[in-house]
Length: 301
Image (tube, rainbow, N blue to C red; front, side, top):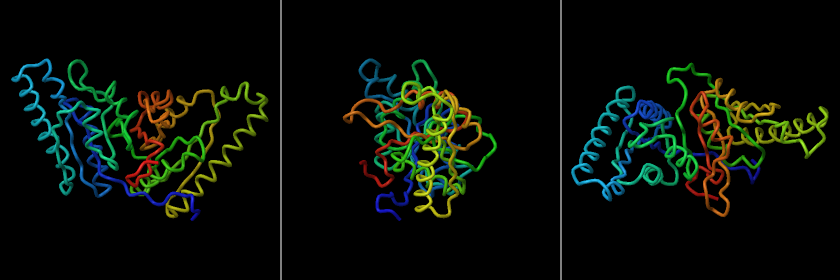
């Protein structure tokens, strides 16, 4: 194994954020299956944001919010326990806002799972500002559960790859494919429009660009196979004018779409680009965002 190739990844526990929405219930069931597959506990969090509510709501209203949160947690535990009787499930009624509460609960190695939409209005949102905030700011993987819950299993995990610099965050994706006994498909997009002004737009020039991407992707796939020799890793470069459109279409034919987050500029600001936004909003399957600094070892680079 090359000394610069990351080693195998140990996937941590699973933390799911719930509110009273149907989307959150779907996310909790997905998270329970994932935790069971990993052999890890599931931690169910309802972030009631009572620290903030106490500034403008009365004591009775805050107490009612807490009681509703406790009831929701009990109900969620019962729902996930039926199909996974051996799963260890813990709960937390957090007084923090949802983004802060879930980030704190996940620690350095957990995976955060949320639904694709929340209650809206006064209730806690589970995508919108909250889900996008978690995906953009978390230092651990975040899964937004999208698509029909009973969609057929494809046995494929797809990772949207830009180049060799993605190798670190691809290792958790490879570990995920391994525990699912699925194949890992590396998909890169040669964006025709991005080449205008950078290279000649002759078809043979674009072909050379795509060929270079294929070569680089093949090398990345080879390094993943060094770490996971039993894992089937395929790679494909698709040429088109819309990276989000190609990835959204690809999400129809995979069990999980994995994307790498952007690197934080000087450690500040959100780390989601327009491609991630588009796939999170329009993908046909659960979408996972893995921070580029995440190595799966509990340490950030």
